Amino acid sequence: MKKIIKMIGTGLLLAGIFAGSRSQAETGELDYNVCTEGLQEDGSYVLKVSAQQIKDEKTCRPIQDALYAAQENASAKKPYIVLVEPGDYTLDLCLHAYSYTTLYVEGATFTQSSSYKGNMFKIGDNGLNEETGVQGDNRSGYYYKNITLRGGTWDGNGQKTVPLRAAHGKNFTVKNVTVQNNKDSHQLEIAGLNGFYVDGCTFKDQIITGTTANEAIQIDIMVGDHFNGYKSEVLTCKDIQVTNCTFDNVRRGVGSHTSWTGLPVEKVYIAGNTFSHIKSYAIECLNYTDCIVENNTINQSGRGIAVYSMRANGDGAYSTGKKVSSKVLNAKTVVRNNTISAYATDVYTAAGIDIQGCILKKTLTVEKKKIEKGNYKIKNVQVYGNTITSVAHGMIIRDASAVKAYKNTVSCSKSGEYYGIEVSERSTGISIYSNTISKGPKAGIIVCRNSVAKKIADNTISNSRQQGIWVAESTAYSITGNEISGAKSCGIRVGKKAVVRRIQKNTITGCKEYGIFVYGKSRVSAMQQNTIRDAGIRKILKKK
View 1 (cartoon, one colour):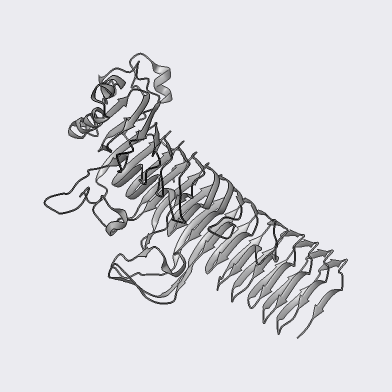
View 2 (cartoon, helix red, strand yellow; view 1 turned 60 degrees about the vertical axis):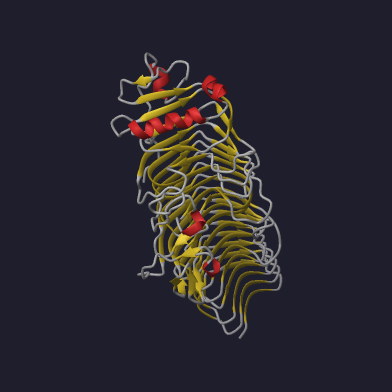
């Protein structure tokens, strides 16, 4: 997977675009006053739009005229760059971009006219196609190619609109863009893209009046009126990169709340972003595969990072019309080295990292297509090197398999039915090791509700408000080498017909009740070489 964003929207790095200004060219920056209009040495073609042109016509139509000229003439060998003079403009129409075109608007601010209600920027056409009857763009597949939106502040002016929109494209780059001040809608919405690269952008000050699920960047699907303005098609997104962006005061950061059942979004890289004051989640990877989420900083978010196969009760799921070969999502996802602060919001219970499958209890019919009932489990997720502070849950693993959580630091701050790390809902093959967990609300680590943990090993767990490690109605193959201190109840608690093969070489100190407590017809096959000090009532208690 590529980890460096390249300005590939025009098939070049914007190098050599200046006449006689090598140093500026190397930075990829265009100076309106320096750059010449017309054919460049590298084969690209520049069209300039001046502030005076826009002022004279009292509209941004000259920009669209230049984009139409690019539509007619641009090609892979001669990409067009529409270069707009920096300034403040009232946008009274949607700017439509087409293949092999860069719209370069660094230093420009576009404020949506109060009388205009549509998108501010869009890939492809508008209007009704008389032959097909399709409202909006009628292209199929990854039709539009190599388009870049570079720079500009796009101010929605409190309008209920999606400022930036794109679909049916290949290689769409958004760089150094600021989107702000739109109402009850996404800020950048895409679907059906193969190659979507967002770098160095700012998304902020989304106006939300209810509890609607509005991501700042939404990775959507093209179905019915749900994603209007384009031809509907079963066409997944793939090769997505969101890097070095800032999200501030928005409902949600980046991700999806809709998905094609059995057709995941492929190859996603979300890295180096900063999220602040997020009401819901910062990142939601719904039905994604081959995904890396790393080095993000998440401050004051309702949830930090969600990795789901399907949302609860199949919410947002759509059928492709084809039989799903496997209900299990092989996520092949890595979540690493993120710093997350999760706090209470009006939308969700706080959680740092949330990994979940879904049991669909009944067959759904969505847009006349069926989604079969069954267990849409998620598997193959690695979570490591993350630092999590949360007022509720640290990490949740539900209805999952083959998940490894290791070398994470988790700290919780409030009491309640929450856990440092929770493994539940028939999860299997889970490994939890080498984590540092403090102030677990009800337990530092819990394995419950018919789940199986391969190992719980070498964790450092301190000051849990009840249990250090708790296994209930579930199985743990081994609980070994953990250091547990200051639990308000038990260091290790095994109950309600739980099964543990080994409890070995753990060090347990300062627990208020028991070091190890086994009860409720539970079985521990081997318990040896544990060091228990300063247990308030008893070191080890076994009850039937």
